[in-house]
Image (tube, rainbow, N blue to C red; front, side, top):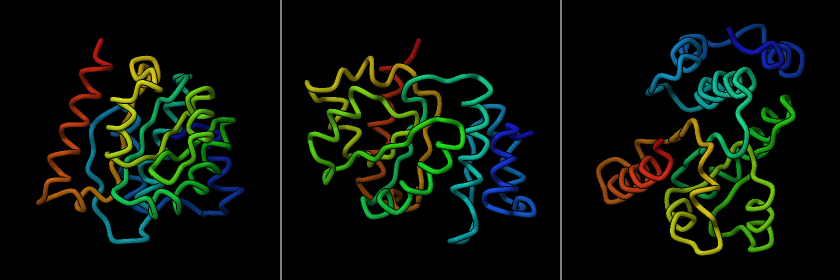
Length: 177
């Protein structure tokens, strides 16, 4: 059910014989646009379980602009994920970019001008974008179709979880039709 280009690269670039069970199970609901909570051990392929169906929808539905937000609790995790997600988006001729507190203003300006298809960021940086006078947040986020929250357990049980919920609600209200 995945987009043919994604399947081609899974088989030929990654040289995987197939998807892992969690990845297989995630395809149908994520292609349908359903909310999902993917639970699995570290290094079990959760990132791919979320991204392959989302990228397939992006290609099939021809999403334009920044259409996927990928939220993580830590800048280090974002920095680690960015090359991998840039590779996956590149399969489709798309781009991924990271935005957090260590990203230079020059790089941020480029992201504002040349909006990536997938933006990796923290909830704190997302909030900063939503209140910044330098970012036309209504225009920048107008094309968001999907939000992926990685390591969601890191937000549970403390103020960061409440902050994440508040930022997501603010985003939802901003992009609601």
